[in-house]
Structures are given as C-alpha cells and as structure tokens.
Length: 45
Image 1 (cartoon, rainbow, N blue to C red):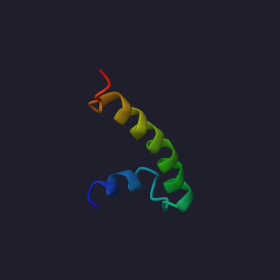
Image 2 (image 1 turned 90 degrees about the vertical axis):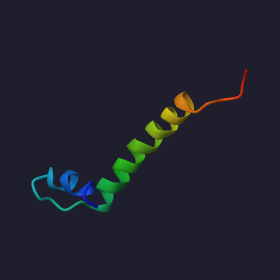
Image 3 (image 1 turned 135 degrees about the vertical axis):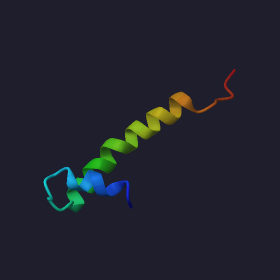
Image 4 (image 1 turned 45 degrees about the vertical axis):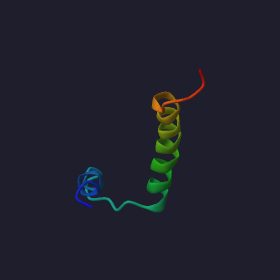
C-alpha cells in the first residue's frame, strides 16, 4: 500500500471516492489492453 499512498495525498487530502477509482479503472484498462496488444509476443507469422 506504500505505492498508493502518495497518489492519494496528491489531491490535498481529499478522500478517494468510488468515482475516482472507477475513472482510473476506465482510463487504465484500455491503455493496458493496447500495451498488451503491442508488446505481447504473437505467433502470427
């Protein structure tokens, strides 16, 4: 949890709500999918 702590305190001590977590998830998930599609070793020769 030591990695999450600095990210939480950036918002001037504002509590992280479910909306913040959902928004971060919606942004991070497509980026993770795109990164996986680019860097994942494929067998399509």
